[in-house]
Image 1 (spheres, rainbow, N blue to C red):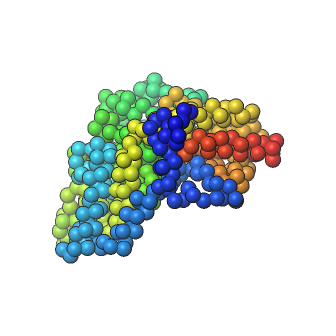
Image 2: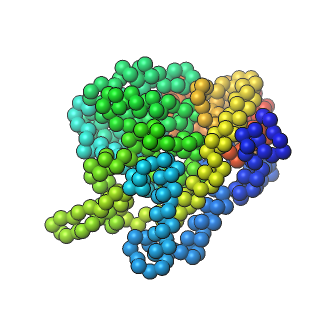
Image 3: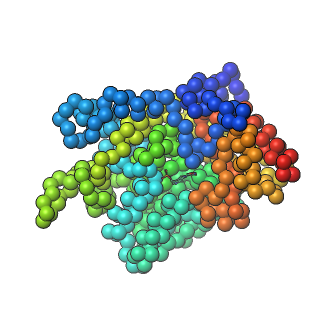
Length: 415
Ligand code: 7TS
């Protein structure tokens, strides 16, 4: 990597950025923390921590229901995040932005509301071979309930979807194509625009699981023409328990509510209830107000750096890491797609990933080991588990060097 001071070729001042993340300034087992588990959850900058604290310290009130000053302030701050999320996704309208708990709930909302209304016996749903369990199991449950068929786009040895095979799966019975924009286990960036166009040509709708894309790249739901797009706040440097589902207005309007309760109603009598307008129709009960406000600060933080710069810098790190890991004898990268986000998943001959993870932890290096909630991916590559280093823009080439040194240590211990 080319470095001028701490400013990288991509124009990111990583040392300055690291100052914004208090959690990174600690030692683990006497070694500086190297955090390589951002795909599981990303660390939070002061901007997010401070926004959540300010809400509780100064503005705390329930939203959408008080004329008093505090309720006005908290409502304004929460709704401001909706505008920020709309801009982040380049959606047309705030009414298309539904707050959910995270990606998992975003998918479940579409399955329960759209799926139950639209999927019938003999219909087909397509997912891909590299989905996270969150984008498999809800569809499987729906298919079981409706006697519909779940079909799977296969992938090649690099971990790339085979689009010719996908084309063959599409037919007039296909109702939905649901796929991950970026794979959490492999790092593959799927050709979302093309997958969506192909689905639309066949008359099917699309849902994009953006959990691993939103932290790493510019998302434009209008350019993609996705019907539904969802991501989690905690993976974009915001808090847990908040996420976003984007849906096209026409589709959301035609869908029944997901849950009943407060905020999603217009009028209630014991005989009949009428529902609120979008987006509130899908937001029953007091939401995660603090989380929503924290998410707004996180989106501001990311756009402040610039998604294009983030993507360029992480690509530098990925190339550097791929080359460095490839030199380790016996190490095999799992997921070598030509279009890849900053995920390095690998196995080492004869050493179990949990042992690798444990020895790395003793070096202060946090990686994830296991099946990454993508068991079918592990089965496809004939491995029980992998070790995964997942990167973010606060990581450095020096940390990759530390990982390589840590892996040499692993080989000493188990070799
Ligand atoms: N989809 C993908 C592609 C994911 O990577 C994850 C979480 C989810 C959905 C679920 O997101 P949630 O916020 O609703 O839980 N992925 C991971 C991971 O890779 N390690 O821990 C969680």
